[in-house]
Image (cartoon, rainbow over all chains, first blue to last red; front, side, top):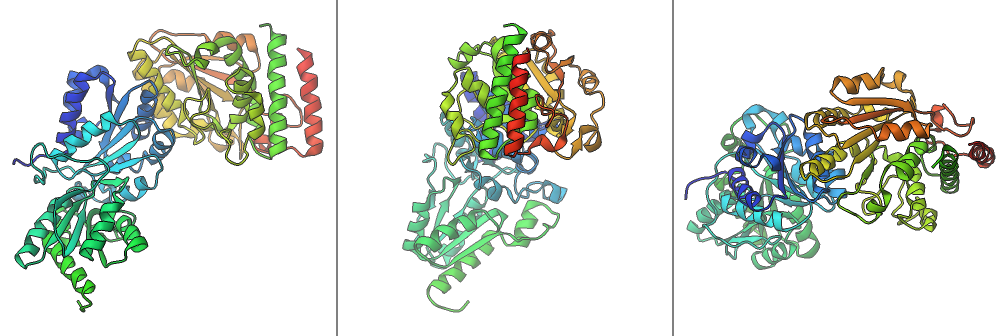
Length: 316
Length: 272
């Protein structure tokens, strides 16, 4: 299947849905190109609002529009929406329970060559800690489309976090998803690889590497970081006894901590959390950064071997 | 209503605020007093409160962007029948809906505010939504003058002009004082009305304690332009103990001050 970015997939679906429902609106921060929502601006100008480079106002205005009965997608680079406009997300959207969906694009290290002003490796942590706000990180285009349908059918605040680049397909066309539940990408009994966003494909690749060694790895796509499917995490711990988490996010406050929190409380097993370390991120393309920071299939497979050895009481 | 009647209503509300603040040790009494006459003008003379209470789609809406003056708004909402007056007793108490800043879900409150520079931009979004829906009903919002230092205010000022939000009136309670001193010492606003005008707004100025002038100002409309009403007000209005003193931004009166302020407010209520 052709590689398509999550942002293009979700925006194409939003446009289709907005054609049928005049209450579906989008606001944008001089970022219609990078969000890929320019077609909606052209075709449905009455449902589109350009805010200029003003993220705080974009999110606040989105909340105001929602108070007049709209479902509003507030779109822009995640690095700005999740930081500059964080108080607006906290107060105007989450606290007020307005029907605003924050679409943060080019997240993680998508903008790696642009430097640390443009990374968003903090947003799972900051967004997960806001009551009333769902946090979703689609892993591929098929899932991103399904998330668009969910968002318009389900009232309430959400933060959707997507990268910039075209991504490998994890799922086939028409794959069903249960929203709020982890998606099992493949079954396995020796170890579970839990990932979200574009790291799911890397985890799937790692599982293929491990299979060649006779290791059966389960892969879970935890695309809802909130509400998180804690039952699936507990089952993974009980049934496979070893877990590796993989995220394009700081090791602080993201998927790894989420999983560890559940596992430690209910069924302690070894967990290795892969992510970006608590240090200034080097400049570089995302692929180079993944290699440097240990987020490739090979690294994930190595971490899996480590937790399996730990589970079996062997030294690594 | 004539000035005398409005004045009596406004001072009754001030007395309620004084009682709430003194009883609970919570609140921002200086700003409550400076904006009370504006709130009374809006809720008793200008807005169609019946429609708002009934949640009619074409109702007028009010957003208290200077959310720290919630107790002033609560007394007005209770008196206008949005919720029973007894509920004022729960103000600032454990588990109440009547927090020191307006909370989401309280009757008459569209949006929780309190972080400054939020309510006004949200009101702009409401106004654009209504305007594109061709839905009647005016959006009013009340800001503090100290709040004008927030950058998000000026993002919204630009936005409202661009989208020609003539169904929006932004009122500024220009009492010239904030916690640390005068606005001109803390972060100068100069000719605030000229600043709004420079951004393309229709600007009206009047005393924030003159009911007739405010009524006219709040009903001023300019096709294709949002309106700013800059109200010249006195912080702590109603008692010389508090008036024009920055520390009364959030001072809590002691028992002796409470009695003296109460006497001043009772006297003022009768003066009309």
